Length: 148
Image (cartoon, rainbow, N blue to C red; front, side, top):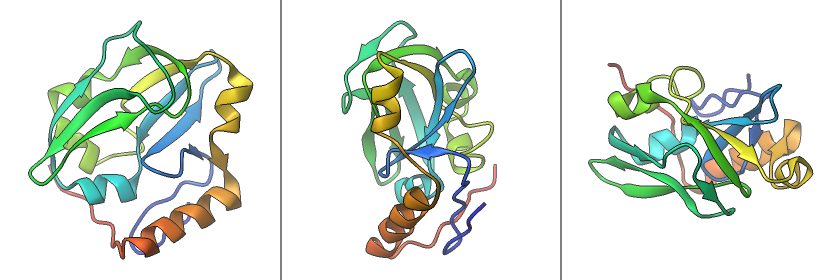
């Protein structure tokens, strides 16, 4: 784990370098979730609407939306693929995103059209951590987590 300005940045994850983290699964899907810096920027999430399993999305198209008291925004697909499973805990308790962004508040499992292309659109390791810390500096962010 690489903590930076209060933000947790797990080194074992892959990142779109904007809002999402991705964890490869053995079945060829990726579990996706909101990064700690992104959940901090959003503020306390009060609503989560995720597209249904079976929905295909092109890279950049919205997988769903999150809403907080200060922000409503789409969750962009990091690569072309199909939603396999959505996390019912997040739709039932959207604020979980602000409490446990890397564990209980994963958003969905997303199956890439092409695995090589998916990895090509994500970053990992020192390159990802450096880019994320630059993003945190750019927005002068100090990460915080909400309590339930």
